[in-house]
Length: 218
Length: 218
Image (cartoon, rainbow over all chains, first blue to last red; front, side, top):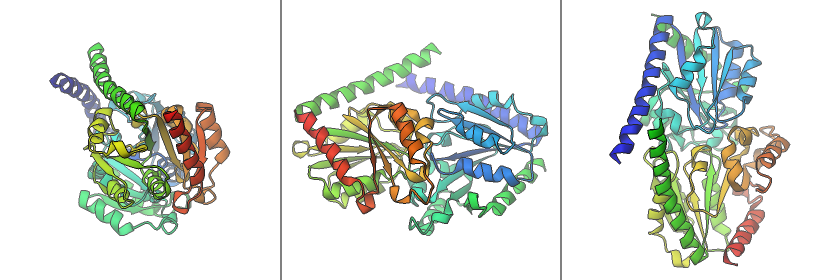
């Protein structure tokens, strides 16, 4: 048992060095990096598509998926530079994979890098990619009980976005329960409600991005 | 690197022995065990609630969650014996945890044991719990691109259930794409469409359960 733990630690430690390198590099360059995490189908790519269409900053995207490059193809149509990472079965991104992908991005021209993690509400929350903030994405059809059932992401998120809020009534979604549980887990996380295909809530999202970017460059 | 692999293998091997023990035990007893896997909010617990209300067989449930016992409380209201496993951050169930939980079930009285895995479309697919079949649950709001993006579960499933089909039109869901991709990955998996809160598709689901139970006891 002690052998297992020690190996696990050393693997984590190696990856933490990449996270540290990424964070140091972006401190120098004044680039904001966000790690977007949520279940499959929570609306992470749709949020990014809507964001990139009107974002007043220069952005790039790193897409993490178990397989296919479908999400990268969707992002590419917005004209934004995008790199696809396929984890080949892996359930989360790790910092060394992000470090490698970053080498192919035009970093001198960028303000923000969005990293869309593998669709998974559990594992990605545990791995530091060197980001400034984790962005938790949870959709109305998933149900309001998710924060307490999957607390680790919500503990660590800089912002929680409730997506697909145009379906609140259809799913009889208890918003008070959802936001109450989020606040219990993480009183400091910003709380946003969006329906990105129809533009709802996007102004508040842009305000957060701008605030974080200004703070980063202060 | 070789050290890491060898440790990982030995952990897997220990757990495979529990999966083997479970499978041998249920072969003797003629109990069908199903491993239900899908994203958070895909409708796994709702499917089970609807199933247990009208199921013509004696069943028990093992609930796997990262945290809380909310799902076990929901199942308990149907009068079905249920055991909660909390993984404390772990992203999937493992056979040794299921073996331990089984000791608290009234096994001599049972026909079917449903194991609801942690909500996660990636990791649980890789771990054999000793089940007869994996049941893949994917919901309409998640979008039709999930089978190819998360192929491992769909490769291995005995049945794929598309849930929340009462929302097909609201989400403009491409059913041909979804079922075409499922068939490419796994031509032998049964394909079902359900809306369990309104009872749609439940007869076909019960027919599959009966067929599997009869085969098991032949």
